[in-house]
Image (cartoon, rainbow, N blue to C red; front, top):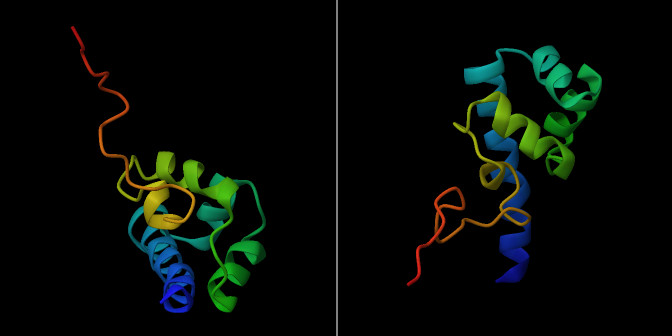
Length: 92
């Protein structure tokens, strides 16, 4: 089961990266500018089906206004939080 899950994660992140490019930033060049790499680096991630580099995730989340989350890009590094971290819990 772990083998299937490990193989599935890059495909999920590549799909999320394609959404960032197509729906939000409109081009690989714009995506490259946001994350501070060459357009060729973005192209290679897409072409080879590699995982989105961790250092890109938060930048892309900010660039999309949260429409594509860091979790969408790398669920292995950014798990879904049970509570909203912006809303502190009140304990009495």
